[in-house]
Amino acid sequence: MCKFGKFLLKFCGVLLLANAALFCVFFFDLDGKLLFRVVEPFLKNHYDKMERKDTLKAPYEIDKFPEYSYDS
Amino acid sequence: MAKRDIKKALRDFWYGKPHSAEEGGRRLGDLHEDKTHLYKHREWRGVKDTMYYFYMIWLYNYIFMVKDVMVMGGLLNFAKGVWRYRWVGQTYLPVLHWFDRGPEGMRGEAMKASAWHYRAMVSTTIRQFQRMFAADTRLHGGKQNELYKHTIAHNETVWGGVFYPWDGEITNVPLEMIPYFVTCHVNSHTVLNYIDAVQSIGLPGDPCPMCQAEAGIFVLDDVPDYAPAVVTCNEACDASVSTSTLQDWFFDKPLFSLPMAMQFDDPLVKKYCAREIEELWKFVEQQYGIPFSWDRLVRKLELQNELQRFEWEKWEVDVKTSYYPINGVAQALYRIYQTQYGDWEIWHVTDRKVRRIMEKCVRKKINTFPQTRHRVIAWSCAPLYYSNWCTWAYNCWGLNVVINMDSLMFDMEIRTDSYEHALEDMAQYHLWAPMRRMAVGGMKHMFELWEYMEKFNCDMVAMYDQLQCKGVQGLHGLFEDEFRDRNIKAFWIPHALPDSRTVSRAEIRSLINDYMTTVMHEEPLDPSLLDFDDSMTW
Image (cartoon, rainbow over all chains, first blue to last red; front, side, top):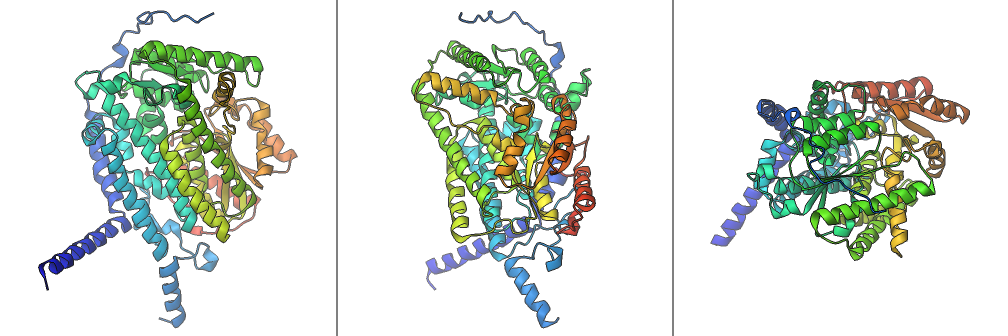
């Protein structure tokens, strides 16, 4: 078999395997399980620990911007 | 194994298991884990539909979500945004499971058309948060880049169409549509942080939880700084006014308040509203130094009218046939998203795809929801954390929600033959806002229900009851009286809009189950869906 033929065969094999693996992820909802049990708790933990500005300490400067007037 | 069993197994493998228990049903409830409601395995819908779902929905959407992120702002901005903002990281990664919940159990053309609607909503969502992140000064060392200078922020209750005159120059991105509204549908856990945050600073817990959540995002300092100016609106109620006050405080930017008149259907009010829109245009010109363009406005309004005309064509099929391929939740969400956000390319692409599917259904006379026992109209505002209740209701009871109030609100074209006509119709459109026209817009509009019920050949009403909306609460009794007087079959769905803790999904299901057994004396199509625990689900 020529080199190109061998390459094509290998390529198709890899494609088939990748396809089968992806189908397993899809069918058994492995993406959902990963996101629910690992990714979301990790990110939640990160957001919970995040330092946040105390927005209530910001002054409410209602006169900061020029007064808006309507055309008569 | 008997020959008959082998034949049945082969038929189930090829076509998928039949829907109802009598036919040896598929028992969708058994596919899920307890509490988390994650799939033990996804549904086998037969070879053709499973492969379509795998390649054209699951894989296609994962690939195109990555592509959208790359094209609209880049992976780096996305990664920074995910790390910084809870509403995107916690919510949008499991988006394919939002897909799963929408067309669960659907087959063939109904599954395809409904999923295309979801694809359009995901793409528009990515467009918005990527624009936020690309322009966000917080993610770019405090720098106000060119994108920042060409973006305007506004309340999600301001129709995106009022910014059409600056199409291509200024991008409008609603403040809450992505951090709040869409999150509730995709992952209902996220919004609870924001509701709790606003109550933690001493605000009462009984006003509309939508307004609480919208303000809570600011309290938790979780809003990107992506625009130099902001437009707010008092729509839908006085709680929204309070939200705007907090937004004005925390966002600290030049602000234009676009009022929503409390009066309704009054020509003078329309005139007043038109003038306010013109004032808004003046504000945008002043803030951005870019002139109003009539040509751009006309072009975009005509594109929007094109979307509206296709919607009317869809309704024709929905009304007159059983070939309509869009399920209740896809219909409701796509339509409200499209009409409120305004014209955008992906809506047209989706509509072309859906047109092909719908025409095929009509041509081949495909009964898209063959287990329909009742044609249901859903009225008032839906529970955001359980917008897919109608998918469950069809699968379990054969309740086919063929139309809903949110789809019918903006039932109009906008004239473009003159400036005066365009402005007048835009004012009308603005006044027919979500949670306004048929929710608190007066008896005439609330009771348009009877008219639409007849038009869409519905024999049952699913009446939403937003427990924290004082406006709609006041009308509960009137509807009860009307249902009795008119001898209309109706069941109530109480909920607290985004807050899944007030009335759980299980309670909603249980109320519908009770109605279907005690009033209608019917048997479920799929008994495995009657009672299950999904208390921890997204």
